Length: 335
Ligand SMILES: *[C@@H]1O[C@H](CO)[C@@H](O)[C@H](O)[C@H]1NC(C)=O
Ligand SMILES: *[C@@H]1O[C@H](CO)[C@@H](O)[C@H](O)[C@H]1NC(C)=O
Ligand SMILES: *[C@@H]1O[C@H](CO)[C@@H](O)[C@H](O)[C@H]1NC(C)=O
Ligand SMILES: *[C@@H]1O[C@H](CO)[C@@H](O)[C@H](O)[C@H]1NC(C)=O
Ligand SMILES: *[C@@H]1O[C@H](CO)[C@@H](O)[C@H](O)[C@H]1NC(C)=O
Ligand SMILES: *[C@@H]1O[C@H](CO)[C@@H](O)[C@H](O)[C@H]1NC(C)=O
Ligand SMILES: *[C@@H]1O[C@H](CO)[C@@H](O)[C@H](O)[C@H]1NC(C)=O
Image (cartoon, rainbow, N blue to C red; front, side, top):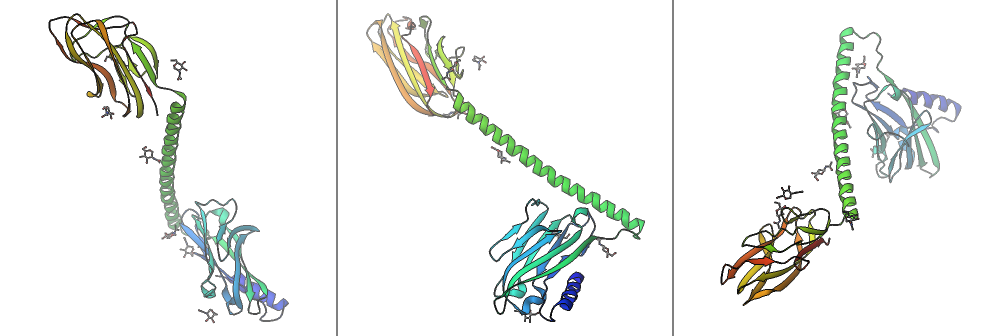
C-alpha cells in the first residue's frame, strides 16, 4: 500500500510544523504484477488525509520519473503525451460536493517490465481558507519477485503468458484485417472516383452501308465514329452502361422501301422499349428519316440497343436502313 506516503508524511512533518502537511493517497491494484500475465493494473490518486482541509480540488497529476502520465481537472482528463492509448488510459472523477469520492485513475493493460518504477501523485487544492496548497505521494510499483517461486508456478506463469499473448495476437490480427479491408475500400473508392473524373463515356455509331432489316433484328451500327469508354460493342450493336446515372441517347433512322410501309424502330433498355420511331408512307423509296432523343436514368450494366419492330408492307419488298451517316445511334453519360 501507500508506504511511501506514510514515510513522506513523517519526514515532511518533522521538517515543518505538525498537522500542517497533508498528503494524497496513491495505490495500485494489484500492488505487484507479472509481466504478460497480469491483464491490467490501475493506479489511483485520491485526496487521502487532505480531505479534512480541502475546500476545492484544482488538479490531480500522475507522473513517473518526471514524465507526466495523466492530468485530471474538474472538467477534463488528459492522457500524457506519446502514451499508447491501446495500453494506457486515464479516467477521473472530481466532485466538489463529495471530495472524498474524487480521484484520478490510470490503467495499464498488460503491464510490462518498463512499467516498474516510482509513480507520483500530485494534487493542487484550495484549503478551507482558500489558499492554494499542494500535496503529493509516491508509490513504488514492482513486478512480483520471481526468485524462490516453484518450478511448477513458473511453468504455469509461462503458459499463462503464452495464452495471453495468443489472445492479444488474435485481437491484433482482427484489427489488422479491419484496417486492410478499410484500406482496400478506400483504394476502391479512390479508383472509382479517379476513373469517374478521368474517363468520359460516349459513343457515336453509324452504318458503313445499307442494311437490310427484319423484325426483331438488333441493328449493328458497324461504323464507329467515337466510343469513349468502349461501352458500345459493334459486334452485338449493344451499349452496356459502365456506370449508373443519367444518359442522353439519340437515334436517327433513314428507311427505304419500294412499297407502302408501316413500321417501328425501337430503342430498348434491357429489352424494354423506351422510345419508338414510327415510319409510314405509301412509297418511301426516296427514304424517310425519323429521329428521337431522350435522357434516361440507366443502372450500371444495362443493355441499350436499337431493335427493329413490327414491319407491315404490301409486298415482300425489302426494307433498308440507310448508312452514309443518315442513320446513327449516339449517347453519352451525363452524370
Ligand atoms: C482488468 O482485468 C480484470 C481481471 O483480469 C478484468 O476483469 C477486467 O475486465 C480488466 N479491465 C480492463 C479495462 O481490461
Ligand atoms: C470525507 O472524509 C473525511 C475524513 O476521512 C470524513 O471526516 C468525512 O466525513 C468524509 N465525508 C464524506 C461526505 O464522506
Ligand atoms: C505475486 O506474489 C504474491 C506473493 O508471492 C502472490 O500472492 C500473487 O498471487 C502474485 N501475483 C501474481 C499475479 O502472480
Ligand atoms: C468495406 O465495404 C463493404 C462494402 O462496400 C462494407 O460492407 C464493409 O463494411 C466495408 N468495410 C470496412 C472495414 O469499411
Ligand atoms: C476519348 O478516347 C480517346 C481514345 O480512345 C482519348 O484519346 C480521349 O482522351 C478520350 N476523350 C475523353 C474526353 O475522354
Ligand atoms: C461483343 O459482343 C459479342 C457478341 O455478343 C461478344 O462475343 C463479345 O464478347 C462482346 N465484346 C465485349 C468486349 O463484350
Ligand atoms: C439491366 O440488367 C442489368 C444486368 O442484369 C442490371 O444491372 C440493370 O440494373 C438492369 N437495368 C434495368 C433498367 O433494369
